[in-house]
Image (cartoon, rainbow, N blue to C red):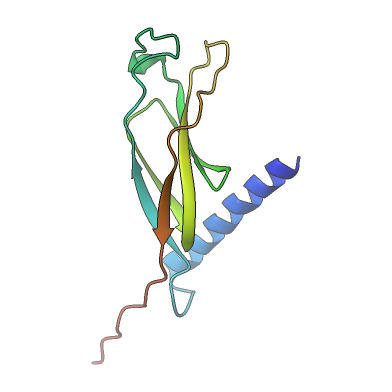
Amino acid sequence: MIRFLKRTWLKIKTWFISVLVALGLIAGAVQAATVNFTYLPATEYTTGEPMPLTDIDFTRLYCDGVMVAEEPGADGDFSVVLGFGSHVCTATHVVLMADTPESAMSNPITKTVTPGQPGSPTLQ
């Protein structure tokens, strides 16, 4: 229950910050940014059997232990909004017909979002 609430709060907070940034209502440094991730999908099951891409039902992206994105299939990339700071992210594949549907976590990568400065005004 606590994990669900934490995950929900993070999604709401990230969405709210991205809306404020998009509307230009946050003055000063940007509090969040869109971050792109690319990955190579798995090609085999842990048993060594080949795994066609069509077997992958979902791919999930976790940052700081919280799922921040889920996409159908495995097209090789994600775009998510993250707050500034350092984030450790991993991904998993989900194959619903498998005994254990979610794969082990991928290798972790660290993405750092740094505060930016607002653009200069144009005087007329």
